[in-house]
Image (cartoon, rainbow, N blue to C red; front, side):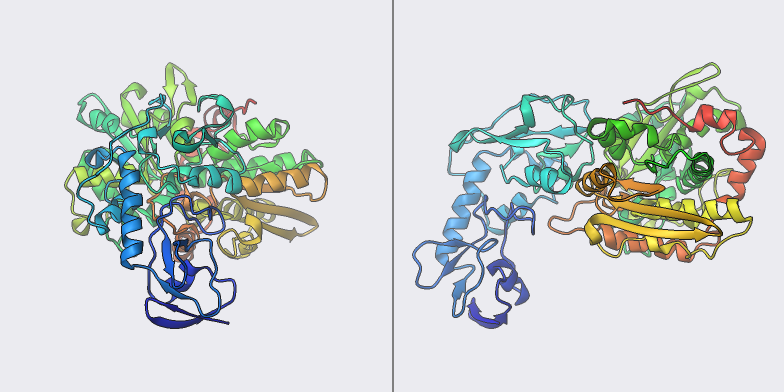
Length: 575
């Protein structure tokens, strides 16, 4: 143990503890803009400096460790003057139009500037401007970038793609897309992790809320919304609601108050996806298609973009089942349009998703009878949903817990856990077991695929299940850096699986790039536990027991993997 004194407090901490962590343990927060534990510890921002007694120069607290007898000051006049000047310099190169920034009120630079009572910028204001395609789902505003390096490090170290790089030197240093490419030319998976780890508003998702408001205002449009499982775990975080208060029913009420005509829970189409994917897996598995490679899940568009550019030889092993988002859209433009007796062109489908890549996935085309268009017309992130609720002046505490519309009202616990890493696998195994045995396994029989903690086992959870004489070897992986490592092991023949679930974002959809941002905190595992809690308390926990899914097959699709199901609920993955 090491004895140190911080702001007059004498404490003992373990050897190797950083000054920042030591201060935090005695209730003294040290501000920072660039620091991400174990990912970005380069002290680029210089905001976290502290004064060490007996030393003339200030030292950074995020990457310097404590030593015996240190006497440290985190807010001395010298530290305060330095910190203030650093932030003033950053503001002189930052677009300070905060009122029109998506991150206003949730911006680390704004908070530190306010805490330091910076009311004027004494330096000449110079902004960098780089061109950017504003139609791309991921937007970058170079005039807001503070060169903290977080995006570079998160993409390289966590997601293993290296989309961002540092260019220039000295005062001309900037961040840009690697390889002198445009973002459209780069192999970006659109996972959005750079967005959720950016401390300011330099990286954001394209805002599509006005597109939805316009559809709501159009008397010729019938606006139909779906809400993904992971959204219910996070939307209340920005609105001051507890997990118990932030129910899916209150989201439904908010959507109806905004003017949405019909609101549904994507858990229904998650159950539909399981019916198709589990049936497809059993069919392909029994044919011996997976002797060399496993079947991979296909519901995560970030993973699909990744595998097509990084491991194109594995594309043929993807499930052909569309994601729950796309299945829902296809059902709305066909089955539901017939139910309503309206032209599919009149239906405007909106997805509320925890994901940025879903904005690109919606470009998938749908052709059915005389309809030619898209399954989904607009995708909003969880953050955009919150902005719409606020812009409609809806008080969250006044929302009622209402049911979604029928006939696609029912959802099961299996569909709910889609939002957590391992959830798709667990849901599929519950139904695959029933298909093989004609009876249900205990609902928690396949819980071995669940993650043991955020990024536990390098994001990979392996499990083996024996059903009579059949042995199923499975793996669930989240995070694209972890995925790359796993696929390379599969390619080298070091491991063999029959079925692999992949989620691009660490922790699964609950940690998606469209979720609320809590700077410096990883919320995925915590949110995932909420989904498993909801599953445990669900009246139905098996996708094949969903009565509304059963009714749809009887009335429209006939059975899983039928010709019509393949036409509308499956797709051909092209490299």
